[in-house]
Image (tube, rainbow, N blue to C red; front, side, top):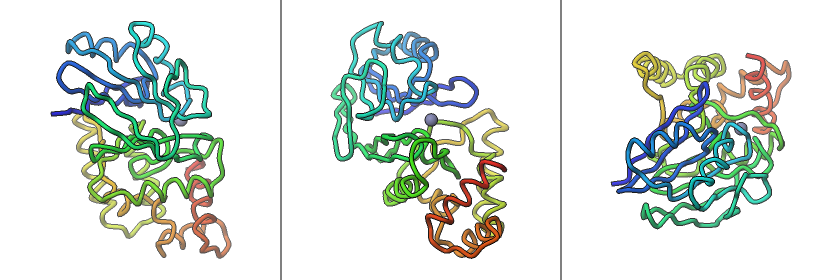
Length: 254
Ligand SMILES: [Zn+2]
């Protein structure tokens, strides 16, 4: 059975590692060290590298990993991914035969110009676009693009497991509670996440159902979120893009 393992990197990144039999694939290896150590310890051969976007904390380890042996490097067409051999775009499908795994590619621009997500095996690898109870900063796109990308991800089935790039969950929940104070599922989520962190465990993966119920950035049409955004703006706005832009701006300063 295919297993998905988080390899912690830097302060709060996760390098998601998919393993099956004697093979493994890694998503967003920002550094090579933790991957090399894990592969060696477990006696695994690297079969593929998947990159969601070009930021160094997601791709910094690729050059060193491919130097150790030839493997396909999938990444967004139009972004400078080191050693990329297989540029991908919306609706492309990629196969990792060694893992008997197939993923479809979703274009989710906003955090970066051509950010992609990989969806397959009931799992979503979404880099820095959708976080547990939050979303990435809008660096290279517009709030409208980012909201569109998040809405695209939110359309996947409830039970989809969400594997994002960082352990930001507790801080995200604190902000979400300020935006959506009467959401009781948020309080429960905070208690669960705190317990996991206290035990030194990741809060990930979450599920899309959980995100839809608690993540304010997926709830820009909910009256409670609209009202909080209006208070922050000091204006009346119900257009989801304005609501999204307001809470994204608020989060940057929170
Ligand atoms: Zn990033």
